[in-house]
Length: 191
Image (cartoon, helix red, strand yellow):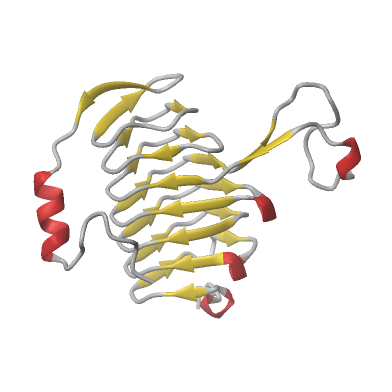
């Protein structure tokens, strides 16, 4: 028999949620999960997270930020295998010691802590990296192995290092299907 993830440790959890017993959520009391959520093996979440409905976090995804970070995923969103999301990061300017949070604050390098948000209908490709303070606007797609260090425009496909817009993405079918499932697009996420 395989060990199960302890769902009771989460701040709140919806229906039809599947978390691999091989996923690690460091601060589960700061994590809210909606309905129809899957978190695969090797996922590693160290920060507060608000995850809406119909969300998939693929295998070996890392979402870091510790107690200072905040990560939000809207409805119908996806992080593919190997994605990295940094809600907090050292600036590595040499103004102090960089790295472990265990370094006393007065000796630390400058740190940027800014929420990362994926609005509704966002998909992030395999091995993409999202930096602190980025908002991925509704319906955008991030191509595999891209680096996103600036917020995006809605319904646009981005690729590259750094990620750049390459073309727009149609939206009507996705919005219609979401509405058929009872979602009001642009409304606050259901809790």
